[in-house]
Structure formats: structure tokens, C-alpha cells
Amino acid sequence: MAQKFAAPRGTADVLPADSHRWHYLETTFRKLAERYGYRELRTPAFEATELFVRSSGETSEVVTKQMYTFTDKGGRSMTLKPEGTAPAVRAYLENNLSQSGQITRLWYPTQIFRYERPQKGRMRQAHQVGIELLGSASADADAEVIQLTVDFYRELGLPEVEVKLNSIGREQTRKNYREALLAHIADWLEKQDEDTKERALKNPMRLLDSKDPNIQEAVQQAPQIQDHLEDESRRHFDTLTSLLKAAGVRFQVDPLIVRGLDYYTDTVFEVQSSALGSQSALCGGGRYDKLVEDLGGPAVPAVGVAMGIERALLAMEAAEVQVEAPHPAVFLVSATEAAHDKVRELARDLRTQNVATLYDLDFRGLRNQMKQADRSGANYAVVVGDDELASGKATVKPLRIPGEQESVPFEGLAAHVKR
Ligand code: HAM
Image (cartoon, rainbow, N blue to C red):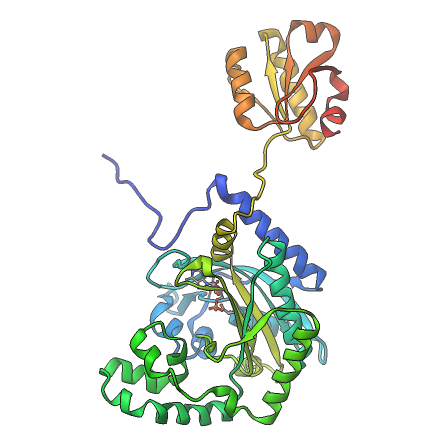
């Protein structure tokens, strides 16, 4: 027997029965982003490995454990993109998308690849939509990105989302905080295994959002990074929170939001959903004022966010948000052999006039065709037989919409069903 294949673990097909939900989500996002003045950017599926090592951070989990890295036939190390921000910044610099002193607004749909342990809402190939706003250091930029984020979920039918907001400061803050945090957990850390010790020393801040109960307990009374912020960071954060309040955006300051990628400075945020179980983050984002420089560009402050598509769809499902599946407007039914040619011609004509039309290519019996018409979800069955050929009028039966059966001249069909 021939070998059977399955989709790789952690990946999923988007099936015809579901694809309209994806379209709905992506279209909602595109229209929203365009309303805010963002322009679409698409970046390649893979990039030089070094791009992600330098941006996500050598010690980040994404880089140390999750990257799909391969050597291409030219001997270069390439990586399937685990996230969209570094590629966006690379494209921004390479294509001179920056106009000096101006703001650049980019939105993107992207696949991401992370070798994770798959579970509900956690895939090895996942999909995001995101935005990057480059060229503004002002808290208004952070507020715009957060506002667009909550607008997105509201427009998807998830009005109750709450933003978890934090500031992780800049280099000096993090240095000071690292010491304070390590001092606080010193006794506990002594008793841990080598792996935990190593991870804690590399990036102690990541202990804060650990899901491990042992670690959670250790950091429970830990000092908070907010108490170590430099004046400028503190002012930025205060301005942002007042902007969000004024705009009526629901948020909660959460000192445990620290993010898993190393490029963030100051503002970080997530939106979580209880519908997702342990994979609670619907989206994540924040400010990254050093990344453009770190990737060889000028000093350009920036802020952005990415929303997981699979997770948004799960949250919509949990909230029972209905998305209408596409269906044909017309199913043409040929009642006699003599009508086949007319049905073909009408199908051509209706499709040209932008009417979604189906007919039975095999011209099975009348009852069978009527059954297919029903099952197709078409608004109308349009029947053509000997009488119709003689009178030049089709019999139009409403299937999904209220109304009586009518005789409609062939040339008036498109207008009739569009009404
Ligand atoms: P992130 O938090 O790594 O941030 O990912 C953003 C969102 O993508 C998550 O909140 C989640 O919804 C979704 N996501 C991530 N990994 C998976 C996965 N394995 N399976 C399913 N969904 C997943 C970033 O990617 C940053 N680039 C966001 C950003 C943009 N920061 C600034 N600009």
C-alpha cells in the first residue's frame, strides 16, 4: 500500500469549512489598519539566522530552543521566521522605507515558525497579523498601537478584552532590577538545579512570567520593575496611561508582563483571554527603541504588536461569534437534456455579472439537482426546462430567502437575484 502522509505535528490545514473565518479576521484587520494609515508589508518566510539571534536575543527561548534553522545549499544559516518584527525592521532599513523625521506605519500578515510543544492555541506553524509604527518616541504612538489592538478585538466581536500593561524600562533600569531580583531570590536559587540556575542568571526577568509553580512562588514577593524605572521611562508610562484612560481603553498595569523577546524597551503589553486556557495571550507587543540601531540602522524609536490568528479564532469560537460562510446566489437546474446548453450559457452570463453560480456539471436527474441546490446553500434554484426555453423565462425558486416562485426573463436573472 502507498505511504500515507499527515500534516507535520504542530501545523494545521485551513479547510474550506473554516477559511471564511480566516478571511473575515484578516479583512477586518486590513481595513482597520488602513483606517489608521498603515500600509502592508510582506516579508520572506526565511531570513538569515543572525537577524533573529541579534533581535530576539541570544538567551531568549525562541532563539535557544524554538528556531527552525537550516543550512542552505550555499552553506548559509537560514531560519524560518519565528516572529515578524525583526524581518519588518530589516525590510524597512533595506528598502529605505524611512523618510527622515517621519513616521512609518506598517501592517503585515505573517506565518511564524516555532518549535514548541503543540497544544490548543500553540502551533509550530502559527499565523499573526501585526503592525509596526517606526519613527515616533511619543506615548501617543504606544497609545495608537494599543487602541488599534482593542479596536481589532472589538470588531471581531470580542468587546470585553483588557490590556495588561507594564513598563520594563531601559538598560539601566534592567541592570538595577536584575540585581534586586537576584538578591531577592538568592536563597531559593541556591537550591535549584543547574538548568534553572543558568536560565535565571541569564534572564532573571523571565522568571516573572514563568508558568512553573515553584518559580511563581519564589518570585511572589519580588521587587517590581516599576519601582526601578528611570524618570523618563516613568513619565512616558504615566503619559501613556492617561492617554489610554482618556480614550476609554480598558487596561490593567501588570508587573508580570515582561515578554519573551529581548528587544523591548519601556512599554510592553498583552491582551489575554480566558478562552485560551494556559495559552492565554491573544497578542503581545511593545516599544523597541534600540532594535533599528541594533540591526545596523539609525536611532529610530518604534512600537508594535502582533496578534495570533489561531488564538483570536479560538476566542471568537468560545464567544460564539458567528461568521457567515460564503454560499452561491444561484444554483441552475436543467430539467431536460435540451436545456443543458442554456444552463451553461446562463452560468457563464451570471458569473460574468458577478453572481456566484453553480450547476451540476454531470446533469444528473431533476430531483438530484434540486437536492444539490438545497445542499449548496444557494439563495435561489433557477430551473430551465422545455417550457422555460419556449417562453424565454426561467423558473426562479427562492430557497434560503422568503418569497414566491417567479418566472423571470433570462436576461433579467442577474438583476432579479441581486435584488
Ligand atoms: P509574541 O508575543 O511572541 O510577539 O507573539 C504574538 C502573538 O502571536 C501571541 O500573543 C500569540 O497570540 C501568537 N503566537 C505566538 N506564538 C504562537 C504559537 N506557537 N502558536 C500560536 N500562536 C502563537 C511577537 O511575535 C512580536 N513580534 C510582537 C511585536 C510586534 N512586538 C512589537 N511588534
